[in-house]
Structure formats: C-alpha cells, structure tokens
Length: 353
Image (cartoon, rainbow, N blue to C red; front, side):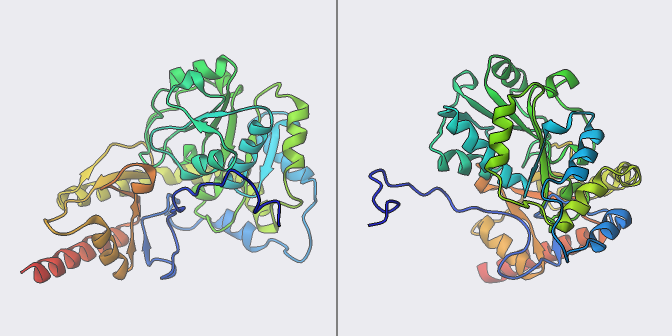
C-alpha cells in the first residue's frame, strides 16, 4: 500500500478555492471580479511581454532580473526571492515556517483564502491571538475590503517579539488614498510580497517576488530557494517583472491613478443609485452589499449577471457573506452593469408575480 494512503491521520479537506476572473463560461465581457488595473493601454509593459522570447529558457539564476528588482527596492540581491506567483510563495514560505517549528498562524478576519489553505496543508493551527502565532499574515491595502489592515500596531508588536510577519503588498501600487501602516524601518523587518501583474493589468502573466527582512538568516533563504522548482518564472514573467522596474512604466502607473479615482467615484455613485451599500476603500476595488428583493438570493442574482456577461466576486469565501467585491471598471462597463442589474431585477419580478 502507498505510504500516502496509509497515513493514520486523514487529511481533512477545506473549502474549495474560489477566485475571480475566467470561469467555465469563459472570460467575462465585463469583469468586475478581479482587482486588476482596468485603465486602458499599458504600452510599455504590454510590449515587453509581447516581445518576450519564449524559444529559450530564462537564466536559471535570474541574475539580471534579481539585480534589477534589488536596485528598484534599494535592497541587497540576497533579499530578493522570486516566485511563480504570490500563491506559490505563500505555500513555500508556510512550508519553511513549518519546517522551522512554526505550529500556529494568525490570519486577518477577511483575507485571501490561500493563506488559510497553505496553513492547513502544513497543519498550522489558526489562532485568534496575535501573541500566540508563529506566522503572521497581513495584506495592506487589504482584500476584499481595500482598507488599512486592522490591528497592524499589535501585528507589528508580535513581529517585534519574534514572530515571522509576511505583508502582502499586491494592492499597494493600486492605492488611491491613504498610506500604509508600517514605517520604512518596520517594512525592512518583515517579508514583503509583490505581484505587479495586477497593477499592470496583466494578471494572465504569472510572476511574483518577495523581499526578505533585513538580516534574515542566509540558511533559511537558501532553504526557500531549494524548495523552489527550477525556472519558476517563464520568459513572459521575466519580461513583466523587468518592465515593472522601468521608470516609464512607473510613470504610466502613477499617471493612471487619477483616471481610476474618477471612475471609482462614478461607479460608487452608480451602485448607490441602485440602492447598494458600498463600504469605504482606499483602492481600485471595494465591497458592496446589493439591495436584493425578497425571494432573490445573492447567488441567483450573480448568476443572472453572469448570463449578461457581468461578473462580480462573491465575498462569502473571504468570510463576508451577502456582499460582493467590485473592481473599478471603465464607464462603458459600469453602464453594462447597471443595465444587466435592471434586467435581473425585472426577470425576478416577472417570476415572482
């Protein structure tokens, strides 16, 4: 009998993974479910990815890419850890923490499901108290709310006390208001996880990286690299991350945030006109509670919208039922959402009567 089948402690499944984006119906015509930059053309980054040479392997050590990322962040080369995606790194860093004796993990109240999936896979116990955790996750701005992460002062105290802190900064480049909770000096003492594909509107290109805390044990960094498969990032991912470090790409991104702010104000007004309750956020996405008539469930409403080519992100898997997360989309997509919602409401009224 296989040793895997003979394990005495059966591994208990967790909830299925739920994500935004393409599904069994294909790519949504108007996709509000993914927190990607929707601000039009990204000529420099898109051109770099389009010109990627997929006929050969990248440098297996990614020397030039790691050097550029290190220079971009002003850190030593040794602190740059490449990853196939943020999710891949989440599982790998959790594995290393478990191998070093971590047995407990703290998760934000509402957070990306892969944090919990990775902890479960490595049998870390989720604890409610920051002071009891060996491994601490945070995301700022947070998802799904797009707000400052709650309890960051206490979170930092736990890190300062010796726990391993990992700050997911996927949405920092898409911040439209506010500022992060940690100082520059504090950021240097935590793991920082970056996924530029969202800010560049190229989520189909999977590539990410993490910046290790300053003076992090070199043996543990080596262990992280040894747990990583060869060539975690393909040619297109290398091109995307290289473009991310370029001044013209950063200038485009900074200049585009004003457009996103304008579209966000318009989209919030549209949602409020539909009697949806919108929660505050600092990003290009936010959470809302749709106004549902009696007898219509949120799942039914979302299915109706999906049939009209509109996809929103149900936040139940984040621990926030009866709400949806919406990314900011261009005015044409907003009008399509309003029209589709009217159709869904009309169809429900017809059936109900």
